[in-house]
Image (cartoon, rainbow, N blue to C red; front, side, top):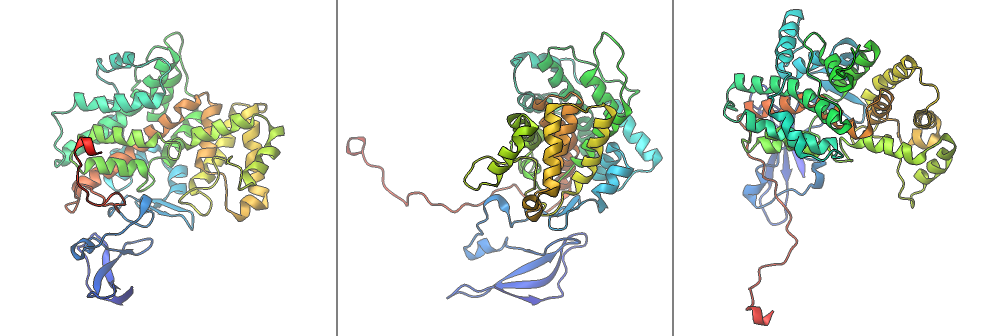
Length: 444
């Protein structure tokens, strides 16, 4: 394949065509494929016309395939860069709140004070859920995994708002976004309370978004609950750092479902289902399970040796990242926040957290980890924080879902606004039987 320069430009606001790749297949005419350039990142070869020539590309896991054009999030894994609408994640985590980031992802710019207050008000007065929804929880076993409950309950929102949504109407899309941002935390807290056998706590409009979530999680009718500001700030940062992460598995699932014109609440349920996987949103849960397996600091050398042994199936969870080949930019913020929380809670002697801190020390000093860039990632630190403030491991992925709801709905809205969007229909490389005839049953 070769490429040649061209001055042809794509439609304003989209990728620019600066070069043409020429694919040479023996015995056939050359095929010209546009090379698209975005504002950041690698150039992309536009292969959608290959089908008209009788060819398709083969890329399991979409490791080298861009499924859409997006203006929301940019990641450079080699350099450890994560941008939301152009803003570095570190600055957003240190200088803004989660709802400011939500506004940014949804409306494309950071809000001023007046815009933020109006946005907060819209969220605040949509946090309650229909009184019939709590009854649905009774259909689940008490020991059901909270993510199983979230998949069902989030999808059930479709039954309550199925007649009011026109996907092509911007105001309807905004209403969907507001409802989901407001109600998913309420449902998540209810899933936790149900698993604990405690009464559901209604939202409190005088509290912040994150403070209200902590109240619904930990308050009881028996006594007043005061939100700890250090814990509130830590949880808000967890929400910011998990708000969006480009075209990951759960976001792609939302886009896939949304491409069919499905109810947006059902699309978010699809994202929650994809997030549940231990290779995706379940990573911080898997990380804590690993620490429980190690059990004690004295056992760490044995498990470090097992992790370095290529023939041993044991793997250290919470280190390295599929996308980031450098330090996860979110982990820097999460590491500092983690130590702030441990100091605030005066946790100095906790077996699980002792294991975590020793693993962190080793990963930052051991040449084996440094050479392979196996740094502690955001899942490692967020899991420690959530454990320290009393959130059970089974709820970790639910917290992730609360945070990621804004990313999912922002991508859903962007897809609805894009006139080039089509129903998703991947191709396959068929390797089954060739055509054959059905024999009569007596001859089989």
